[in-house]
Amino acid sequence: MNRPTTPNYLLLAGFLLVVSNLASADELPGKNSQWKDAVVTQLDVDFADTGFHARWEYYRCDCGDVLIWIEQGAPDGVLTGELLIIDGQVLLARGFGQSGFDLAPMMQAPTLMLQLTLALLNHSQPRGPAAVQEKQTWQVTEPDRDFSINTGLASGVFAAPWSINGSGWVTEAGHRRFELTYQFTNPLSGGAGGSDSMKMSGDLDYSKRVFPYPQDTLLEDWEIQWFSLGEDEPRVVERGLTLKSLREKIADM
Image (cartoon, rainbow, N blue to C red; front, side, top):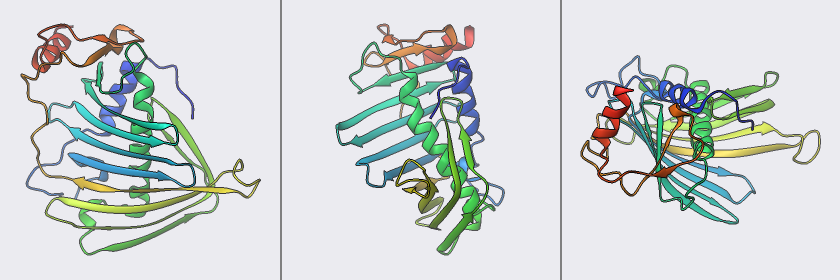
């Protein structure tokens, strides 16, 4: 996985574009909806035989901001916390216990895995979530073409051959549940013919939801990093700063 050299605020703006275009509340989802249009996405990822498991929950505000709740488990411990992306220019974080460290790497895994999962869903059911009513079983095999993704914050290439086995179904109005197993070639795993796999499962909610943090939320227990100003490390949020006043500051710049 490689980190690009593009300024971080442009990369975050690109990520917001990937998860933009909120679906209308009465569509749930409409016939033209895409997998990425979910308002709330719950995603669990297990990497085979590595001891790594992650659970991410993504909330999209109708103002365009994105909140990510993170729980990542590995053999050396568990990492939990929250990231809040404001207008693609500012990143807020709390709960990680990593004061003073560049926040950009915290975005890599959740953005990369969300884009990968959405791409696999597009391959599995190209007509989008509205095409899923009764439970469907998906099988996709690609023998020749490598599979590449690039979030702007991180990139990855999965060598051919690769395959998807999975299913999707409706759990309740506006929701689509999915389970996917993605198997791909990895020469570093068991020699030239080696392969690895990962499992993704989750829930996509296309209904209108109230954003977890209202405009008057005080941000004093968060750390803030202004990517648009070229900052490469966070600082403690100033006293009295609310989500509304931060958005106003960004708008005035």
